[in-house]
Amino acid sequence: MRTFIAVVLGLAVAGLLIFAGDASFAQVTDTTIVPGYVGTSHSAELVALLWTFVCISLGALVTVTVRNTKEAISGFIVGELFFGIGLLHQFWHAPTWYSAVGMLLVIPAALLGAWVGSQLHQSVTAHP
Image (cartoon, rainbow, N blue to C red; front, side, top):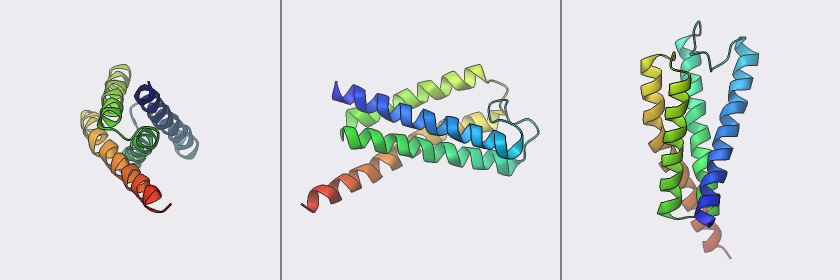
C-alpha cells in the first residue's frame, strides 16, 4: 500500500506542477501549452519541454522519498507514460516531434529524480 501511495503522490506532484506551469505559460505568452503550441516559438516549446522534465523529476523525487524501491519508481514511470499517452490522445494536434520528445523524456526525467532522491536519502541516513 505504501508503494501505491508513493506513486500516487509522485504523479499528483508532477501533474500539479505541470498544470501550474501551463497556467504561468498562458499568463506570460497569452496562449496555453494545451492547444498544441500553435503560434509559439521553438524556444517557448523548448522551455515547456524543460519544465515538463523538471516536473517529472520532482514527482519521481517525491515517490522515492516516500518509498525508495524499484517497484515505486517503476510504478511512477508507468503512470507517467500512461498519463502522457492520454494527454497526447486528447491534445493530438501538438506537433509530432514535440509528442515524441515529450514521451522520450519521461524515463530519463524519472530516473534522474529517483537518483537524486536516493542520494538525498543516503546522505540523511549517513548523518545521524
